[in-house]
Image 1 (spheres, one colour):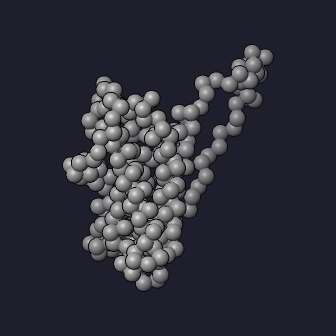
Image 2 (cartoon, helix red, strand yellow):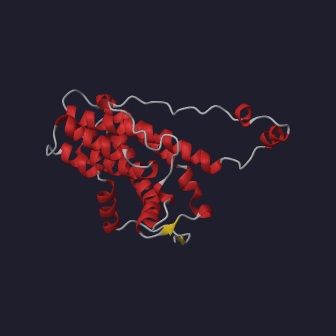
Image 3 (cartoon, helix red, strand yellow):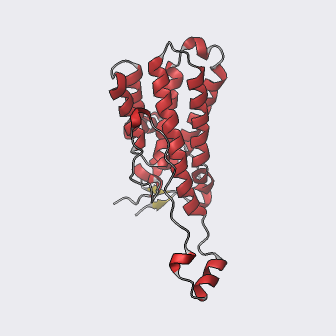
Length: 234
């Protein structure tokens, strides 16, 4: 059983951050790519697959940690120039994501403390927007690069695609949380004997976002989207 979370925001310790790095994997794979320990398409695909297999809430944490790695290794000449404000924005957004969503995820997935709907709802509902903020920042950093650092450019492109894709998935989960239980007009139609086939809207598939290397978007979770924040511990 999950315990109820007390309404206090605890900061992340070094141990907490280490746990997040180990649980997400993607920032460690990104570090290996940027340091030259993993090379070429294989290194980039490893980052892509690590984030792509995650639920949107964990992907936000993963992308935030990756953002800190990007901020560390981004070309110094650009950090001291035109990209400086963007890098600072990335660091602030990433740190805010980690002390809010990261804290909730650690409490839920590692310590068995469930999110409090009253206290934590605003943070949970903000996850799609947080992912879109990262999408925008990664896009700006990618555009600021020249052709002298293809590894950095391809790494940021992967993060940009994943942030955009997970923002769409997070929207679907948030919509489930805010959806009314039953619409009055639906009840009226049912009472008049309207068939379920005619009353129910047609099911649409999520939009497909182009991914690098012609990789397909993971199909798991395409119809039923969840956050790992809400997984019961056995």
